[in-house]
Image (cartoon, rainbow, N blue to C red; front, side):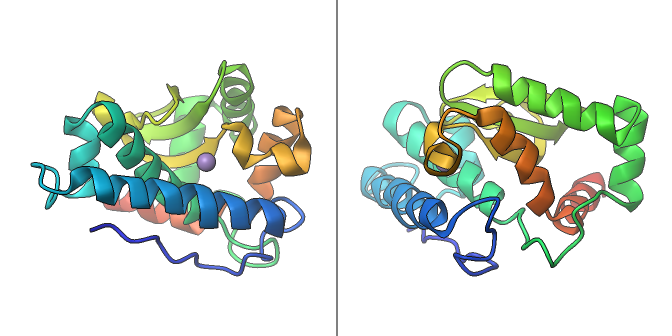
Length: 197
Ligand code: MN
């Protein structure tokens, strides 16, 4: 049985970058539906007792789609902090790794936004660590997650229209650019350090 994650902030906390209306639909309706569907689909299957990430790596079709979307959204929603809280620029080891692998923080953000705006259709853009410890940015369609390619994900932006259409309509690039203001880099660095151990 999977349960809806608890948000580490109020539904109004990410305004004006993400409105209360978008967050309440995205978290309370879309993510809740993926959780409910997944729970129904795994009853009586080999996936019933399996950890979420393992289901994503081993399943296909409807189970994969719902499990992938639960994993993706769990990582997505827990990477944010309100504008006046948390650290919204990278520091420490994650900043060192970004500078090493992308040249600068600006280059990294530019490549990330570019991959987000050029992803055709629905999906996600991800920052992950590869097998050599290098940071990589990938585009993943629909419910895909980089774990299925052996990558270890750190940060993501949801480019499904449900993530931004109420607030930004067709302006996906503007939405992606604004999301940097609420990324909680303390959380991203924590994920990075956990993976690098
Ligand atoms: Mn979404």
